[in-house]
Image (tube, rainbow, N blue to C red; front, side, top):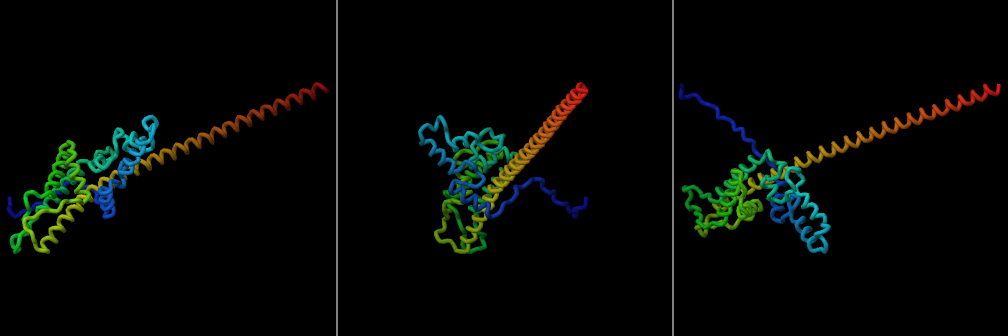
Length: 275
């Protein structure tokens, strides 16, 4: 075989999650920091309402709106009344995004790995001074725990609470100050280092926001189908009522016609008898 023959690189069939916009990413970051994210039903407001209802007298017997909402759980019928909190949605536990789980887990693991890679970045040796990181860096340990949790998700297992908290901090952009051995690194090196870390964090946050976008699209689709079914059922009932009214009108007309015929027949008989 000729050694100069070039082969085309086989294209990957992996489906990447749909990218979201900057507004969706900012909404996610704001929601992760405040506890109330758009597209996640059971957030901070729901928990506050549930606690307020719990302080009222007789709430065990009757319950309030938040209690009933929590009993119903996620809006998808396949979630078996699971609370739709941040972990349920962003970890793709919801049955609405069942088809996108594997790609989402891989993308989240890759995003956390890119954050760790950015945190461990060192400039090339051609520069005069290098950026050496300490071994006990809390930011790197946070990224390592997040990667471990995403890896468990890829393997079909559930991450621990500490690993999920680490992922939450990455999505909220709450990274500890990276510790470096050099006490006074050059400004251009630190600027490039910060840019790499921020870029990797934004990519991870956009990946997490994309699953909310997919889930909201499924919810809107189901809501549109439900409204269409209700509209078609209402139209069918309206047509049935219309046909029933027409049938009743025809029966009344036939009954009136029969009564008129009988009266006319009786008058004719009375006239014949008098003659």
